[in-house]
Every structure is written in structure tokens, then in C-alpha cells.
Length: 395
Image 1 (cartoon, rainbow, N blue to C red):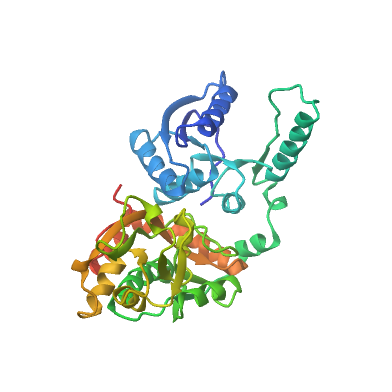
Image 2: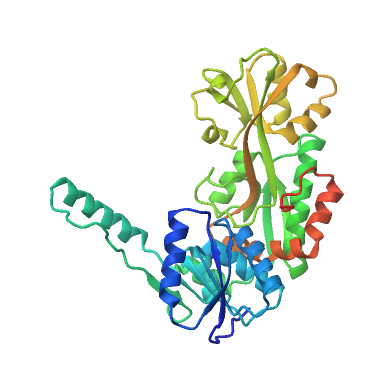
């Protein structure tokens, strides 16, 4: 969507979570527009993410359709705002972000976002290094050191884009090779089918065929990282590098530790110290366990639960729904009444994409199409169809 360049009168601000970053960024904006005649009619928390920016923008436009510009405390929120305005077919609202993240730069290049304030992270690091040296040598006499930002708009954005990003803006995509873990039983097939149908609804209505290939989870990671597949399902943010994680998740998991009753004196995760703890290979749950364990990775959920039943491991960690449904498929080999569940973390599930131009294009399409499915009600219909117990966008 191309934003119409008009002078705004009523403006809305999407803030971040309460704290110094949000206060300083919003405060700087308010100082900058003081005396300009612009009227701030809304301030709403976007929670620093695109889903929050989308929800905030929907609320803003519902309350005051005459808003003509939206400023956000970071780029992720303004990316969500752009998705909301696309759905509402509002081309007349100017959108301004902050940070200069890659996804926002691409949307500036395609006229979906008006501008952002580019933060030079490298210059920030150099400045901190130099200030620290001055402090150690007794030369630092200041209090505040400013690191300048740069406004990035349609006029100069291509100078900030990588060659891969530039190619992704023009490349035509006709198919999508999607990998996911091998379904060993009804449980994995159940969860993969929900995610697979979501991805089909994202891409196939716009002419992109989704091709599914089943491989072990860790192999799927390597295939995407090495550009031998375009993307994969069931990824946690931050687990693997060299993959693109979009802004929109499609599911939420409640990660639990399960163990035989009375086998651990559970007060908190410290009970796992020195224990044999297993999870599916490649999931990277060690990031959420702040203690030393004897970690064991399994290819399949069913084999991990069998190991737990036979006392070959002390604890198994996974999404609680997956544990419950896997145990049902074991037909008497795993008696749930003998086990205790303890909550560890709530994690969002995302697809992951290759870093190729095609992968970047597919990730951008995903982030543009997911809010369309949410707004139309089709996303919730898929959750109801597959009987998934939690719809991740109810709130």
C-alpha cells in the first residue's frame, strides 16, 4: 500500500512498555512537535511488538478515524500499525517508527511505512567504548553523550538496504518448500497440520504453493540455515541463528517439566540441578533452565516419554499439550497419574525462513497476511477445526 503524503493534524502515539526507553522516545517526539499545531489524540501501549502495534492501531482508528499520523516508539510496533491500516484500506495515514530494523526498511522501500529514525548500533558501541576509556583515565567530564540518529524515508532507504533485501523486493515467488518434524503419531501430525494449514492459508490464496517435507527437527533447522529449504515450522525465537524469524507468531506453548511424583522435591527449577533432563533435539530448552543439568536430546517425543517411564531420564521438558497428547498415543506405556507437571515458561511458536532473497520475501508476506487471517476470523476457525485448546490472539 502506498501512503499518501499529506500534512497530518491529529496524531496518535504507540508507546512501549513503561520505562526509560518509552519515556525518552515519546518525550523526544512531544518536544519535537510542540508548537507545530499537531494534536496528540491518543497514546496507547503497543508492548514493543508488531502484534501489539496492530491491536493498538485498530483501537486508535476505531476511536478516532480522523487520525492522520501514527508515531511508534519502535519499528516493530509501526510494522504492526502498517498491517492494520492495510486491512482497513487506509492509505492516508502517515507512519513513523524508530530504530531502523531491516523489516521496517523494506516496508519503507515499498511505501508501506513513511519513515523511521535509524539508530546506529555500531556508533553507539564505539561511543560507549570511548566514554568508558575516558572515565577510566579521568578525562570524562560530561553527563550526557548524544549519539545522532538519521531519518530514513523513501528518498534514501535503498542506501541502507543489503543487496539481498533489494532483490527480495522484486523477486517473484511461486512455491514455498516448508520443513517440519516427522510426525511419529497423531499428536505431532495434529499440531503440524494446524500450523501447515495456517501457512497454506497465508500463501496459497495469493498463488504460492506450499510444499511440505518431513524431516527430524534439527535437520529442518540445518536445511533452512543452509538455504536447502525456504522455511520450517515450530521455531522459538532466538534458538537458532542464520534464520529469519517473522514478527507474528502462530501459536503459544506452555513449557512444562514432567517427572515421576515424589522423585523431585520441587520448589522451583533448582530442583533440576544435576538431573538427567530430556527434550526434543533442536528445541534449545537449556536457554530457559537457569541451572546445570545433564541434558539429553531426543528425536521423538514418544521415545523420551518411554525413557522417563523406565527411569532412564529424570525429567522431560516440552509443551504440556504435546506431552498429554503424546502420552495418549502410547496406549498404556505411560500412566499420566504417576507424573507431576511443573510450569517453566510460555513460548511463542513461529515459522522460520531462510536468509535468501526468497526467504525474506516469504517472511514479509507472512507478516502481511497473518493479520489478514486474524481480522477475517479464518485463523480462529482453523484453531476450532483442529481442536487446539488455546487461541493465541484472544487477548
